[in-house]
Amino acid sequence: MNWSNVLQASAGSLQPLPIPEAIWSNVSMDFIEGLPKSQGKDTILVGVDRLSKYAHFILLTHPFSTNTVAKAYMDNVFKLHGIPKTIVCDRDKIFCQDLLLSTAYHPQTDGQTEIVNKGLETYLRCMTGENPKEWAAWIPLAEWWYNTNYHSAIGKTPYEVVYGQPLDIHY
Figure 1 (cartoon, rainbow, N blue to C red):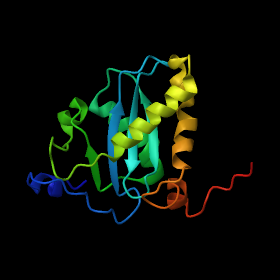
Figure 2 (tube, rainbow, N blue to C red):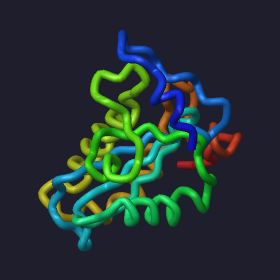
Figure 3 (cartoon, rainbow, N blue to C red):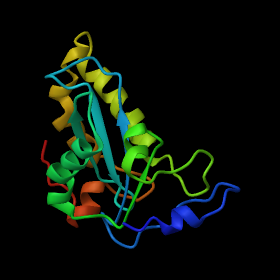
Figure 4 (cartoon, rainbow, N blue to C red):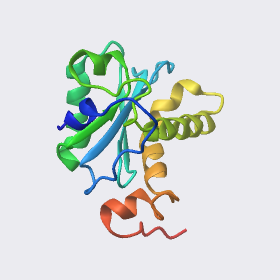
């Protein structure tokens, strides 16, 4: 991964991150934490391809280490998409331990993963209703829902961008 651009950029007015040249070459990651235990899990690692907007939602359990997060990424994302050139991540202590991170007020950070997080949290609240401890069972469908929904920023679904064709669903 190339962190030199992130490290060398100076603080200043907010600037958008450059548009990636290829899918899964630039990834943003964040955690959704503080969830009630569900199937033994209490955290979601959200990984989003910055070009296609395609996302993966990975279940974790506290406490977890940088190695645990890296293994979860390898098991769920790397095996499908390879190693990204860059990763934009928040200031979570896991990323601070061994990984380089985006800094507060840094001109090269983006809020893309936070937007995905809010949508995922809303989806899970709607689907679990009065059974909030059942959220983990909804993650596979939530990931499918997110990736097959139209995104105005890309003019199509993340699924279409990654697979080159619309999902053929007949209702």
